[in-house]
Length: 296
Length: 267
Image (cartoon, rainbow over all chains, first blue to last red; front, side, top):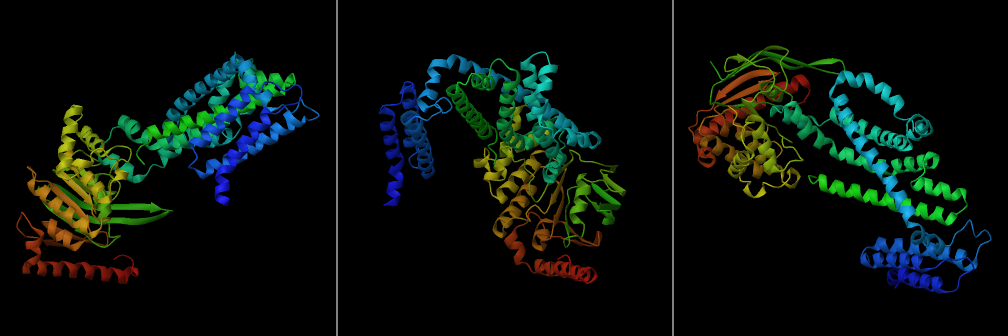
């Protein structure tokens, strides 16, 4: 009985939410259509995943949140309506402002990918170099241990001032954020490579170039991808924070700019966009992992 | 002159500042085409001896001669099969073998390498598993693939470090027979040094068994059974049983003596 209730509860909540949306709202509430579409999209994905119990649980939480949000902002009407935008107003931002938003998203993503590319390039190659040389690693490791824990975001105001453009500054800061974990990971995996693998490679008389390409890199790949997973969220945090300081585009700028004008509908929408993008980036990495590491 | 000749090889290793003796004046010769087993209780230095032969470790003093030439480091004339993990987990079985071939014959075309790899994998009964990754295979099958890779590299000398030590009894017998057959069928006779602590395995496979104790060779027994050998007919013979008894006595006698000295460590 309770079980059955549990499976239908999210759908009951969905219907409740729809009724709530369609009932009259307080003045100043925007068109409800975009919000309605979002709700239907949530319900559709819930139905697609109806066999998973956890999807049901998540659905319940999301709907309860949306109902509370919708009820107190659009139906009851809070005193500081400007500070608490109704979901209708938030989701109505997209059709109104999508050019600006997508431009911001792409500008942020371009910087991210540039940073990722550079960090991978330098992290992997320098990590290999340092990991392979005992002398280099014993000299550099103490220095690295001092520098690497400094949160790279600290550099951003200085980098903005120092480097020719904001683009260059944020790429620098993002690169640094992702670089350290990859670099450290690479050094460790080269130095602590399984002796059995190393012995096997040595008895095959593997030459140095092939040792790097066919043994050390594939051996370190899972570690690199794992550190990317962690870095995605932090680097996005660093980027948006940097955008708040000195950019004229990007999601961080979008949120900061509109909060200066007290346009909190746009602020909340920007926040939601960031959540969506970080999730998509994480999915991309999961996909990458599945594609590249089929051997365990 | 032997194919392999170890002369008074000494090797130490240091752990936390304490120096341990790993090999203490190890000397023996192996003739071309001969199959020699190194047998002894754990800690006697037999695996270390093999790592000197393979070139993974160079002796602190004494010499390793191969074909009469002083040798250090690994070389293409020697192929090694370890107890665990000889295969690279990120390469499929056939890629593992092909990669091994590539190291020895860099001028061979990829197509030739793949054909060659397939041929050797068929030989060890893995024709249907060539595109699997090592983690998808059982320990026994992984070991077959490792043997195929080593053989495909056509080394003159085969060094095997307890290759069947981690495999269940049934598959172990199958693999021993497989190795016996492959070696007897191959055109040029391989020189083999085989580390084991299994008495039956040693007798079945070897021309000569060397006993190791206290980090050097203590005794040797010649196994004169005719080749090709067959496990069933061999084991029925009286001469096999008496030889086995002799080996077992030697083996356990050495172990007992050792356990008195070192307080039961070993066996």
